[in-house]
Every structure is written in structure tokens, then in C-alpha cells.
Amino acid sequence: MSQESTPIIMPSERADVMDKIRPDKVVEEIRMRLLGKVRQDGEWVDHKFLKGRALSEIGAWEISLLMLPASSQNTAMTKLNPEQIKSRLLNLTKTAQKMCLRNWKEYNIQGIDQLNFVHEIVFTNTLASLNQPEGEGMRRFVGNISSGDIGYQPEPEMPGMSMFRPNMK
Image 1 (tube, rainbow, N blue to C red):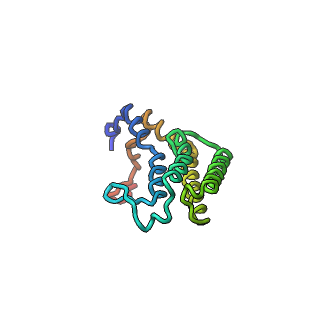
Image 2: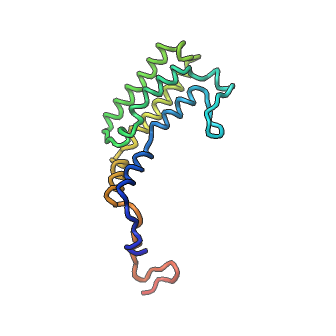
């Protein structure tokens, strides 16, 4: 591959990638699943077998809203240190537990297992979201798009090496 085959990175590509980094979509999916819905043919539908275990509309809304700031484009582009991540993670999970305990009837909490379930969802989603920008990976990736540092790189030629012929010295 020659240097001429390196693609040209257009400035609009950075904006396109930013539009595709949407951790908030995961929060919406979690909200719908907490409501006892599953996706069928692109639509969210209620399932009878999940309704007895589902959170109420207000419960699913408030839990998803709690996770939203940690699952945003802003957070995906922010480099947090391990102490900041640990602090946010603990605060969000404690708040979720308090919300579920305080509002258990309104949230349709039927047992302690649902409290643990909500805790694990908030913990896992928040941990993944806050760790995503570790090492500035997402910021560096988006930055590279705008500076043209990604794309096709020419294969370095190795003297005497070929995929189609034996090593010749």
C-alpha cells in the first residue's frame, strides 16, 4: 500500500464520531429493561413474565436519571483519576440504595433481591462509564480523527520478506 492510499480525514468526521459516542443510550436501555420491557422487532414491548419484577415508571426513571451524568459524552471525554472514579461510584450506588429503600413502595420493590439487582446495575454501568476514558483513550481517539493520525498506514517493507516468496538473503 502506498502513501497515496492514506484516506483524507474530513473535519466533519470528528463530529460524526462524537455523535456515535452515546453512553446515554445504554441508560435508556437499562430504564426500559427495569420497566420489564424487551425489544422485539425494534420496539419496546411489555412482557407478562417480567411485570411482577419490574420497577414502576418513577423508579426506573429515577434510577436511570441517577446514572445519566456518569454515562454521558462529557464523561466519556473526561479523564478521571482512580480516586475520583471510586468516589463517584460509591456515591452513586449508595444514593441508588437509599432511593430504593426510601421509595420501595413507589418503585415497586418486592424484595431485597431487587435492591441488590438495582445496585449491581448502577455499579456496573457506572464503573464501565467512568473507566471508559482511562488513559484518555476516547479523547485521544477523537483527537486523532481531527488530526488525521488514524487511518491506513503503509506496511513497512522488510527486505527479503514476502508473503508469496521465501526469505531471500
